[in-house]
Image 1 (cartoon, rainbow, N blue to C red):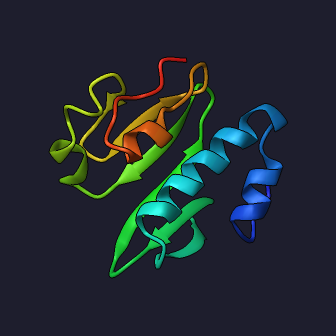
Image 2: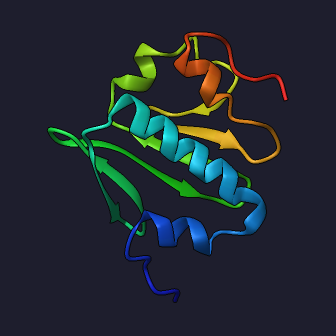
Length: 112
């Protein structure tokens, strides 16, 4: 069993080099919308706490899982329609840009 990372920097550094930029992009998007959120590691992945549990994200084999508290995903169903979602998770595929920069600007996801 791998040793749990001590912080988000070590979590990202331990990921394969080719996915590190995508992990940093997810991190930056969360920090942009919740700049006062405390950043920690929980369940072995990055975790953000702001007046309660806000978000987690973690590298999976084929995607980055972004885990949010309900009803956030349901409230943004239209914007997230091109992703696989559950009540509390969004799968950001590794084979295309997650489109987070455009989402923040209120536009559609990147087409790459």
